[in-house]
Image 1 (tube, rainbow, N blue to C red):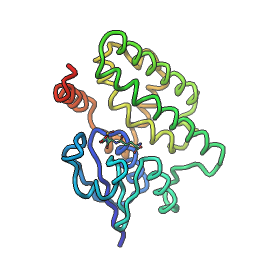
Image 2: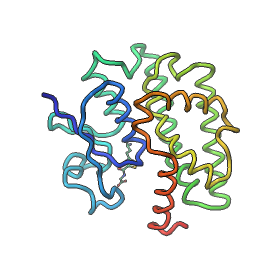
Image 3: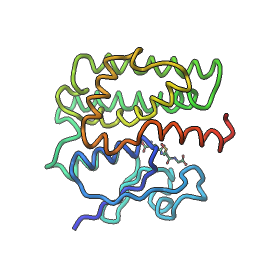
Image 4: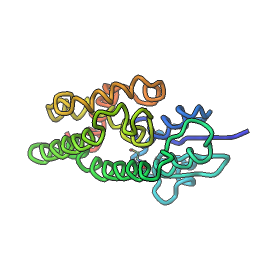
Length: 222
Ligand code: GS8
């Protein structure tokens, strides 16, 4: 009997990646929510023991052994449950391409996302511009395809889709519309949300917005 536990936090896009992958593969798992991910002293003993280096979620604990970092977890899941739906392409070039865009996105989004919700004035504007530029590049990579790998909902789709539950927050705080800026990207978002795994794994954008307002208060960035 396999034991699969996911340590998470509900607004974390990195955790949502893992949830989507587990749901797509039909793997049974137990989800454990961290009560407060922002203060090391409030993190669970299990999280600190399982990810002592970064102390971050997600962590997947498979038969008692932890695996950390969302992308590494996705690759692990794909290798261990290989007879189910495939997350990673069999083609080495497609796989490398997906990894390239995930790496690009992960490096950009932390900084421009923070500027959009935590800053004002020029800094906020520059975050918004960087964010839109980043989406336009991704939209270009998507082209006319249904998903980033064509007809297959794959690794890059899974890695990118979770951030879209923050779009409502960014749009409200920075006064713009992703739909107007990147209509084809938004068609892809709608298509992905039609998948059960995505609609089950992602929280409602309005809940995320309320959460960001609370965080702004807590950290005094109103
Ligand atoms: C990032 C995980 C992360 O930032 C990954 O898994 O891909 N590169 C890692 N996790 C956040 C959750 S919020 O999105 C976290 O655990 N933060 C706690 C902290 O910074 O102390």
